[in-house]
Image 1 (cartoon, one colour):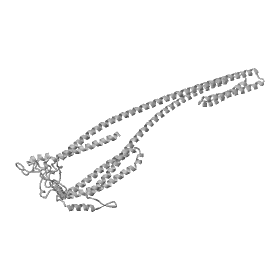
Image 2 (cartoon, one colour; image 1 turned 30 degrees about the horizontal axis):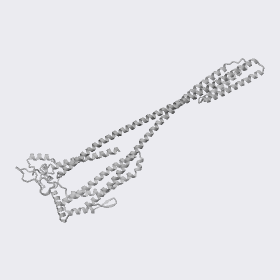
Image 3 (spheres, one colour; image 1 turned 60 degrees about the vertical axis):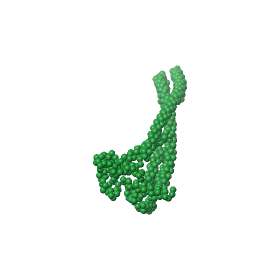
Image 4 (cartoon, one colour; image 1 turned 90 degrees about the vertical axis):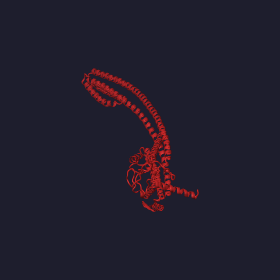
Length: 553
């Protein structure tokens, strides 16, 4: 490309900017552009600190990762923190791009004003230089900010690279946190299953122990009954000894002494009977001791009778008493032997019954424990089957939702493409409303629709905005739709609509309507609104598909 071509291209660009400014119904002033340029330049500079703060925040979260995981539900908290941080940094990235675009747009408008001779190029350069030469104090440091377009764009590209790298790291950390959360959930389910199994086993042991205690309590009651029967027999024997009458006073004294000794033995027997309630072996030992004491008492009685016999008193009566005492002793000995044998038989039967009861209790406890284990296994299998059915149903629901959102996403993509083609086929821009700076010769020009003077053109009327309402006013006032004036016959001014000839610098065509009632800006806004809604729908479908994929894993 030669120098002449570059000059021609530059002239065309300047001419296009000049034409755009002259035909624009409203445009910003130089002061407004300067304020916008300074404001968005400061925003671009402040984004550096925000990116550094975002990086520090992520590093702080990853540094405290171990402490967070030690807390209750720490894995969920880490995952949520990283997810929220990613969303915040996505917004920061969008804000950086928006600030850079607005900064470049302010530069473009300043150049357009220079091309339209509404601003001086030297003033523009001097203003940018003054901004760059100004010294700002941030803390204890002096800072000089950049407002040159190329410098700010390079810095913005660097910031975007840093933000992209930070988002990639956060995405990797988020995936790691999600995997760790799923692993913790599996470990939690396994621990609950093991705890449930331990509780079932402990319940079986408690049931077995309770039955053993019940059997021991029953055995103690049986031993109490046996001890009571033995005490009744001893009472009967004591009464027999107490009621026995001897013909001789000495024998009566001896029998009285014997009764006292038997009474003492009974008291000792009662003391020992309390110990006999524990086991049958103690009962046997007590009976043997009582038997020995009775034999010793009988031997003492024999000695007394012998002493009486040596004294020469009534030998036949003494012999009879001796024989009677020996017979009673023999009877007592046989009765003790029978009681001892009976006690042994009862003890053996009781031991066999205890062994049988223990075996029955053990078998019953084992059967019940096996039954409980089988029931627990059955419930576990049913729960696993139910979870499998739930997973399958959830998977089917996810597939249905995924297909539905994919269908909606394809429909949105097709609609966006159609709207983009439609917007490209409309060579115009949206209509701008509100107060505008008018030329000197147009200061007293009234608005055709709201009748205000010197504030705005008819096309920018903020009161009457719709084309239908504007056409209604023109018909009521009998005005021409081409020049907005009142005359008879055809219009001879040859109106050229700004919106219909938006991209035509030369050879603009005449139109049958004025720019203020052109329907193309409204059609453009409607198409842009439809495209915006379609893009929002597309973003929503993509977000929902991402959430469905995360739920599946």
